[in-house]
Image (cartoon, rainbow, N blue to C red):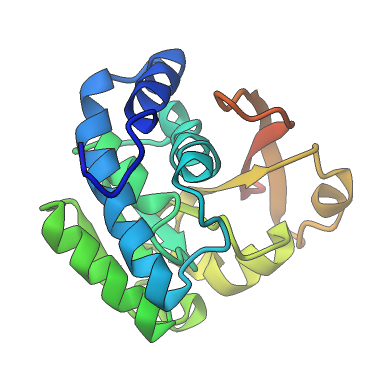
Length: 212
């Protein structure tokens, strides 16, 4: 265990992984990522959550709660910041090819260092705004934890989706208003309640696709 992290973190993470149906062995690379994030966060303010224990729940387990609904194909994580949820998903799903899309230079430098240190052959960094990523139709799925409302995510990232592709959006309380505001040609396919270990709050995964 990395000496920069409290000893109590590993059992908390391992218990959470088991509750999500994931292998406890994932704890080692996830803690390596967390230690790197904590260290860089002191200087670069990559995330507002600064307590490592809170990061386990609010970052790692929250990101991994959607793992079962992510296909082993291409995923673009738009406005990924310090790599959330993209890096935990890439760690948990080695067959998944993840593009980490981030325009902020400091965050993109961190992402490249994390991908290198963790030897994530299935992750790449695209230092650009999502709307400027010139890879039309290249992805089966896109996600965006920090980009706000559903319509806004589709506005900047819909061009990246294959014709049968989906937006996977993690939300808190079921966002009826956002669903009602979906752009023409898009519809909610599924709303899946999720339980994040250690988080006493509602979480929903919304799967949005084109009207066919």
